[in-house]
Image 1: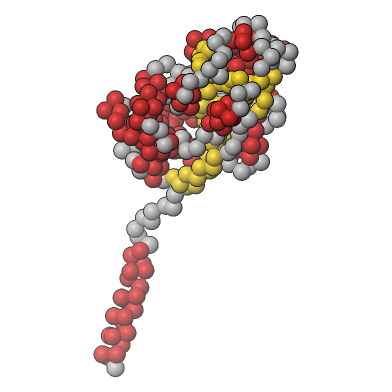
Image 2: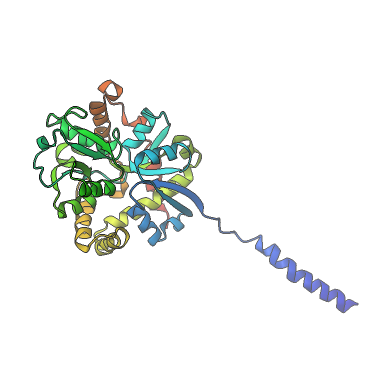
Length: 336
């Protein structure tokens, strides 16, 4: 009997000890999920963050949902079908002012190197009179850039030329190739580079004619960002580290190879895209910094071109909360 009791005791110990001990060791937390809406496919920062394990490092699982145009993206963000958007931040301003949605800009990412690209037989902005020009949406971001550039040459939308919404940048180039009646559009790299290689002409750039411009950045419903602050900061930190990797000269060839493989660019276009986007003003920003002066230009453009706020732009802090970026940048410096 003693042997049987001893046997049962040993079995109990074998069963219970692992269970008890399991409770004494910290468990790995499941990754926190975040749903990001984008317009032009998976951003290079996201590709790098996955490649280097940065999202995993910060305990994140990132779902990326690509939309066909900015109208759809803004509507989905407002409807709670995404947590964060990566898009030209003028869309955040439009959500606040036109759709009355309380969103907040969290961080920058890219400036604007858009150019007004036209059909090969058009050699001046004046020749766009009476023509049809393509935009993503008629009252946001790059459409406002185009309106301003044409206003500088005395051309008014609806009077001197027509605007036709046609979706994201690659779609607009395809439409211009297929239909010569579409005279021009604002296009950015790498699509603008492809267009020029195919014989389309540049009639001027944002950098030349408008100046600094805060283009793509991260924004989110304000209440959601507040309620998920730690998650947002971790996500932004991973994106900052990814952008730092992209901009590091030592990673140049790897970055070019990534552009070739992820975006199906030729080596020639990928090398040009790298030089334009990673080394020149208006491209990817150092540490994904928010360009405050460039954002003031965004607001000024909306005031001048659309007559928003009676023509007098408000202060940037109505839309941008720098505390998220500051915390994320600090996190990158203190996370091994």
